[in-house]
Length: 120
Picture 1 (tube, one colour):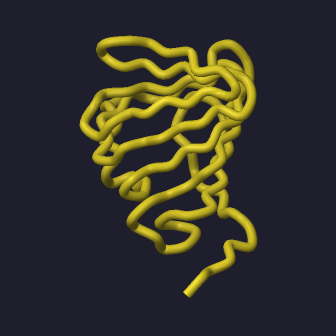
Picture 2 (cartoon, rainbow, N blue to C red):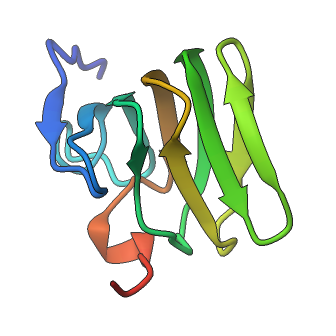
């Protein structure tokens, strides 16, 4: 049966500055474990701890630029571009060059239990 998601649910974000996460589909908003879809609004200078997640993440930048660091390479993903980070690969996201709006799809759905953030 089809399900209408009337509005997203705001969930807590990690990082040094306030970031807004609006989850449309996922464990919190729709009780969906197979995948999550969220719109992110990150301020300039935001950075989150590195992580080695147990999910694949597909990210599309809508405006601004998102920095994506891996052990092998750093990407500055501009509006209209996308990046894929596979599960089990260390990654850190940040917005050093200004605010950024992007959509993140995680398979399986994002959960604090499987993101595996670096210790403080």
